[in-house]
Length: 143
Length: 170
Image 1 (cartoon, rainbow over the protein chains, first blue to last red):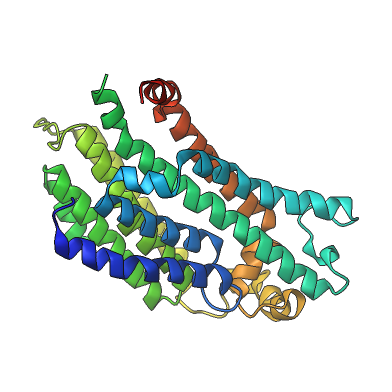
Image 2 (cartoon, each protein chain N blue to C red; image 1 turned 60 degrees about the vertical axis):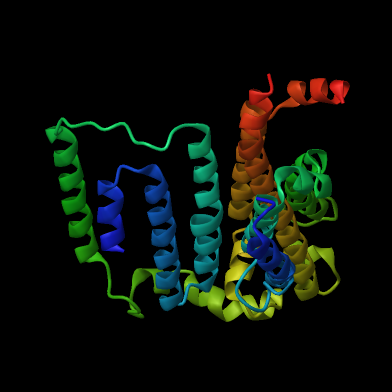
């Protein structure tokens, strides 16, 4: 799709705002609607738009598959790691109140970390699935 | 939405079906906004209308764009569908009205969450606090499901070996 000038220009204009919106939904999920899952999906769709317009190769240069696979596991690790950490410092599993002297602050921190984990896993899984589907025929056709 | 569904069932060209599915998701997202479920609307718009559509298009480009037509009319599936529909409609008769404060869903734990969540977790958005804190296990389970799906796709369709061979050639 390298020849479609309009698409390229519009995508270049839109993609930063999509990413910004994703980050807003991620970190403002405590106050407004949104959270890790929605943010991850929005982030992934922005990235998928990029790879649709500028080609899979360029997209993989920015976000190599190794990093994505790492991210898939990292999010779940953060989530369950927060739970285990709470266990270790004397609370229940996923009971964020013990993470800080002030229970409310602990809850806030816990939810923030957990949502971050959700966001990382969701966005990397979405992008990985897209990359795998989109790259499937290319790699098989070469053989 | 009803029109989209009928068109979905009739059309044989899969590209059109995918596009109609996307439209259906967008309409569903609008409906969720009307019902004040903005979080769900976000998800529906991004996943249903966006990513799912692109993934299905990718799948179609790998396979074929025409549905295999089947002209025989099947009685048994039709009967099952109609029976299920009747059962579902019968079930909705027992549901309480939309926004009824006496509905069981609003009587059980919801008042506690609504009253306590802002002070206990320090965040104004009750949905987030319920999802991440009160129902932390459920959310962890969901994330694990997504993780498993990603790993499954990587294992089934990912190209570990081919990739290494390509790297050798390059």
